[in-house]
Length: 381
Ligand code: AMP
Image 1 (cartoon, rainbow, N blue to C red):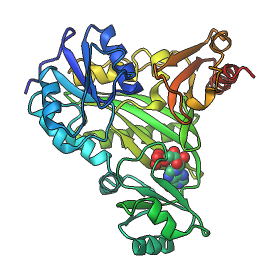
Image 2 (tube, rainbow, N blue to C red; image 1 turned 135 degrees about the vertical axis):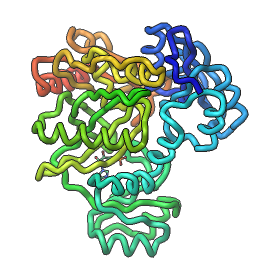
Image 3 (tube, helix red, strand yellow; image 1 turned 180 degrees about the vertical axis):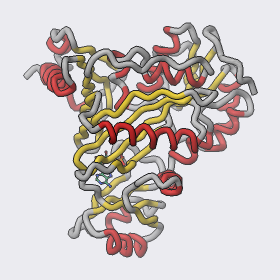
């Protein structure tokens, strides 16, 4: 398998076709690469930007092989892809990061066991395979606690908070009786994340720690940089580095943390790809998280992650679209220091990520206030 750099003019294959792939494709095309995307859907956020949009099931190994044959390197923007599929692709083109990285991070049990084995703090947890396990786990961890299905969860999907009043049999049924993790509830001060990138030869860069505020389990506003101590910042970088070296990641990875009131960083989740909390890097940093992914998977030197000014990003969910009344774009765009990004999705469903706004300002708090104000203007109220 080649370790020569994959140079502009080559073709990058992206498994997945959402907004992360779209912003990756924009970065790749700017540098003169061709992009193919593969997913079960059509007219997708990534497909609208890519040179080729291939439609197929991730489990159709022949389709995945046919896709990989047409490209110089395969990366992904969607992590719930089976090992069989990444192996099928890897026989024909380098897959970066590798399928084994996906295998660890796409499953909460494997991910937590991997982190715990490295001595990295995670919320106390028990594995749950039956209603009896759930009852025992709740006694052990106490309430509140959170039941999460082990596979295929994101944005709070497949999660249920367990309180003293919860009917455990109903909660277990809601989880479809599938392998789960029961987690102690973390009484956090705030949530923070770090995005880092590791090159083919182990080169390294990170974007620093950012603060994430959620609404209904979905990221709402990211503020960059986070107002944390230098020690916390350094510790986050060290954890990200340990994780990426242990997994031998080539590409971008996001570590999401809970920051406790006593200043302890507890890892919540890993995502081995660009992340929603890094969208601000497109407007605020010399090299975006998407261009870093491109540089890493192509074996090119990494770019500078220098941030020009404090920034904040607000997600635009489908809820902003009222029947017969799209958001008031001209009013939102009237703030000249706010940038609008839309993902080309035709159907605005509640909770669906349709786009985001980024504001740059003199301080992180000002940027957060500004981006919230801009989003408020979109509702036309
Ligand atoms: P996740 O899908 O695991 O990232 O969870 C989505 C959100 O739910 C997190 O960002 C937190 O806001 C909240 N959450 C998840 N797990 C816990 C926990 N153990 N303790 C407190 N809040 C949690």
